[in-house]
Length: 392
Image (tube, rainbow, N blue to C red; front, side, top):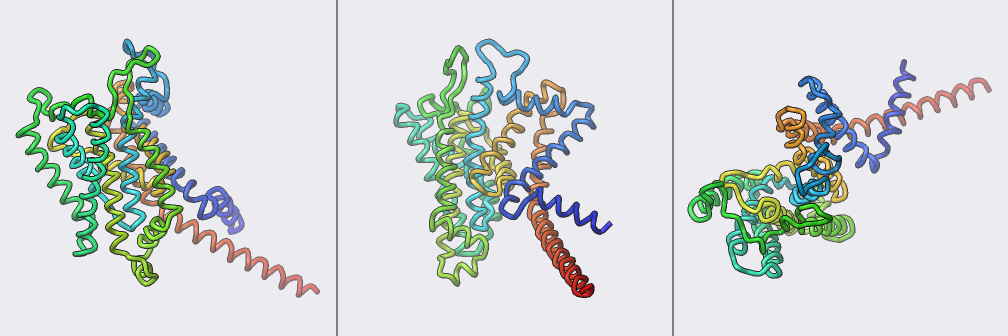
C-alpha cells in the first residue's frame, strides 16, 4: 500500500513538474477546477455544461452563433470582445505590479474612475481634434492614475497606513464625490449617465465598416499589448524589477542589502496607479463612452483574480485575462441563449479566485511531497546497500 502511495505521489509530482513549471501547471489546475465547479452548477440547473461554455465563446466572437443581425458577424463580436479585454489587461497589470512589491492595490476601480472622470471633463467635452484629443486622454489617464497611486504609496511609507485601507477609502471617496459632480453638471437626464463624450476623444472607433461588417476598433488594445511587453521586460530584466521583487519578498533583508524600500514602494504604487489610469480611460472613454454615477467598475476587482491566476506575471496575465474576459463578456449571451442568470459567470470567476487563493498551499504541499519522496528514496537506497553488505 505504501509503495502504491509512493507511485501515485511520484506520478503527481511528474505531472505538476518542478517549482518553475508549477508557475504554469498550478494555475492550469486552478482553472480546471473552476470550470469543473462551473459545470457542476450548470448540471444542477439542468443545463448542458458544454453548451453553456460554448455560449460564452459565442458571445465573444470566438465561436460562431447560429445567426447574426444585419451588418454584424463573428468578427463584430470578437472586436467587441477586444474592446472589453483592453481595460482588463491594464487593470490586471496594475494589480500585478503592486503584488510584486508586496502590496495589494485593491483601489484599481477607484483609480480607473478618477482617471476616466478627469479625462472626460478636460478632453471628452472639448472641441479638440482627434489627433490631439486621443493622445491627451492617454496622458491624462497615466498622470492622474500615477498621482493617486503615489498618494497611497506615500501614506504607506510615511505613516505606515496599510495600502488596502487607504485604497478602499479612496474608492468610496471617488465614487461619491465624482457622482455628485456628474449629477450636478454632466448628467444625461434620459440615460442617467454622464453626457456622451466626443467621438474625437474616444479611444474606441465606433461603427467602422470592415469587409461589410459594422464593428468597433479598440485603439487602446495595441497600447495594452505594448504595456505587457514593457512590464515583462521591466520586472524580469531591469534593476528596478529586481529591487521591486526583493522588497516584495523581504523588505527588511532588502533594506539591509542597501535597497531603498520606501522609494520602491512609492514607485511601485505610482506605476500601478498609472496602469489603473490607462484601464480607466480605455474603459470609460473607450469601451463605454460615459460614466454611470455611484457605480464602481467590476473590472478593478476581477483584475485581482486575473493577477492571481497569472502569478502576477505579465505573460500569464494575458492568458488569465483572456479567460476571465470571455466569462464576463460572454455571460450576457450565455444567459439569453440557454436561459440562466448571467451572474453565473461571476460565480465561476469567484470559484476560480477561490482556487487561485489555494495556489500557495498547493505549491507548499507539492514541495513537502517532493522532499518526503526524496527521503524515502534515500532510505530505500541505504537499506539496499546494507542488504548487499550483509550478503557479502
